[in-house]
Length: 118
Image (cartoon, rainbow, N blue to C red):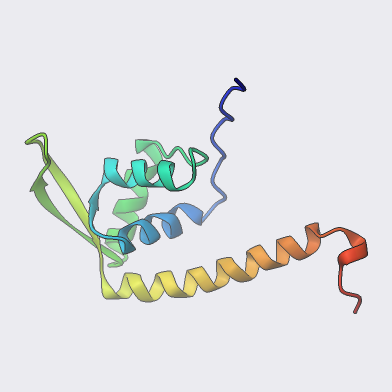
């Protein structure tokens, strides 16, 4: 069996987008966000606490997400994050930008013979 590929590094600015998208699916605590990102990316994105929590705090300061204290299933006190309306608007804008970016990259990576001539 082939070894599992190493996680991919995130491009600058993409962690906020991925966190907001994860919260669009429903409120979640930090560990749950990290697990969702890993699962939805088939293990390609392994976000550590040293990156995730500063991103969550930044999004909270920007008033894109809010956090409340709750009790986890293991009876531990955790911060649960939820997407705010401003976060939904920001996410919609950033998704549009990301889709344009991905299409542009795909266009450049396309084999020359299938590229559209100007």
